[in-house]
Amino acid sequence: MSDLPNRPTKKISGLTRAVLIVSLGLNLVIVGVIVGALATGGFGKGRPGIDLSVGPISRALSDEDRAAMRETIRAIGPFNRDTRAQMRADMIEIAAILRAESYDRSALEAVLRRQAERLQGGQAAIVTALLDRVEQMGPADRTAFADRIEENMRRGSPPRSN
Image (cartoon, rainbow, N blue to C red; front, side, top):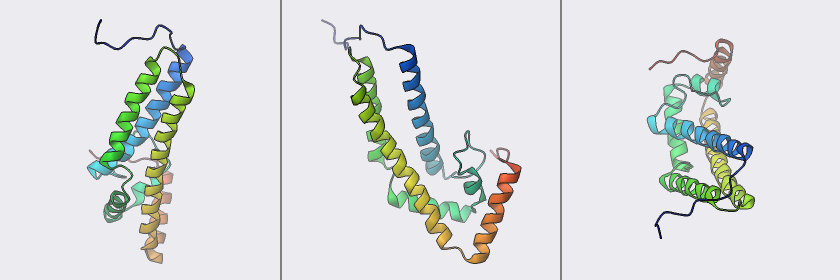
């Protein structure tokens, strides 16, 4: 007997596989953009590969504002080491579900929903950090921030600076 796991004899349909790959890919892109920006201190710097509707807002923040938001997000902890480990464990579980001889839709759905909840926690942390930062701004700073947002909307994404 081989130590290799049994491979499924029943194939997943092409459409189901494509939907799963696209769904997982989008989840990973969103997590990667947020985690990468937080890890590199580049939240809002340069042009992101995709615009998650926060582009004009994040580009309009000053370096000081972005740094303060990073600290708030780190304090809230949506992307801590434990959460990233859970995301990796979910990917292993997804692979096992996909390799199983019979497809268990409810098991896959449960894992994908857990991931979605984690992503929502990250988005909520970003919203909280932005709200906290704007709350600390005076009227003139808020007006200047609004002006920069509108300017970013008019001209679109700036060219990459790095």
